Image (cartoon, rainbow, N blue to C red; front, top):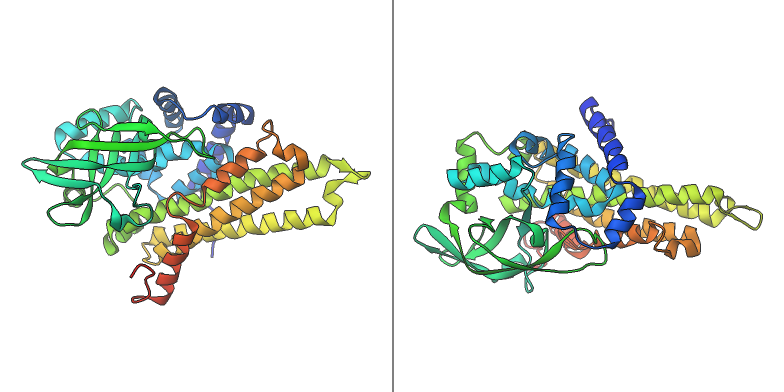
Length: 402
């Protein structure tokens, strides 16, 4: 297997790392992250900075961001520097992907926001009674003439307090099946509040309330999917398109975010590991650098193995997605679970190596640890990822939900 990045991928990684280190130095990130969620204005300014190096969700740039390898390189590098930024792109990608296939008035409004870097999207599926159990969603959509009327409540939605466009999951009252809708706040409206978290503190998260929210019927997912195929397909790689058509669209949509979460975890772990290595060389106790102590070296060994194995598993999942392999669901679930737990272990050991200093809010270690803890729950808990893996191995008749 060739582990080398292509020249294009290598240049993207180098350019991105240089950009992140310049625009988001550690001292700034530590201070701003502790202050809590970004405002919409701050988020827009950040997205404008990214667009200066060709990273965005507008039609001109989204094809690159929907390349599984590029997206996961992006996730790893952002994870190293400021994980709170990733939901601005990861959660907005799905509504951005389908917006060009909406009716002309809807499309024009959204594309204008994209051109100005004023588009912020969110993926609204989780509910108070439907976390991983999406079959239990209570939000409903009823067709009335040319519109669906949506009623319900969503929770723990990244970007919700600052989003202008949402991809909303709801149960169609006519068919009983779950589907998704492209919803604009300016036109259809929703209410939101803020939820605060242990990690990703600068990433806005909240609840969403839909009260007789009227959405054009052509904003429904299957209408948009059909139009996309009629117009040459979605702006994604050939392999990812194959995956979207070989399994359910919702299942396929989750493979890339889960692989991305794994590589984001790797980035967080890498940052903590690098700090621990530096400190082990210069911290002197009992007359010698602590890096000479065997227990410190054992921790560094364990940290290194966890990072390398998580990265390999993550990129194996990316490879499967790129090829359109249906096994991508299992691999991305394994990667997401393993990567998140690995990041927790690595950041814990990094804090141990720093001793009392690792507990200080003046150092980034406690932020790494809190951000790592976040990696084990969003986009599917570690436990659900294990169930998906078990079912994928055993086959039909072995679903834990049946």
